[in-house]
Length: 90
Image 1: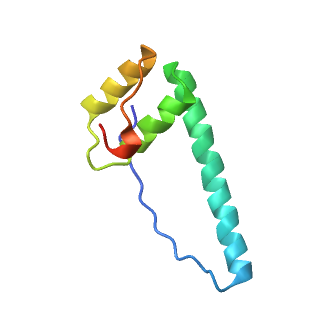
Image 2 (image 1 turned 180 degrees about the horizontal axis):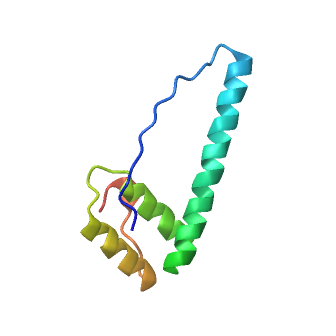
């Protein structure tokens, strides 16, 4: 179970086409890496990528707890529907 978190902020250069393209390339790389991590952790846990995506989102929330994450993983492994984490139902 991962417990380390990183927070990043960006200045979005909307009025500079060259800088905006660099920013877009960086965002594309971040998204690709996130997708790789979701797939890797889903495979390691034996759960769907959709459920892993919900769990990873839950990790980013201030309401995250180790107990809550373990509960979501248990539900996913049992092929039971997860509560709507994105809507704050958990």
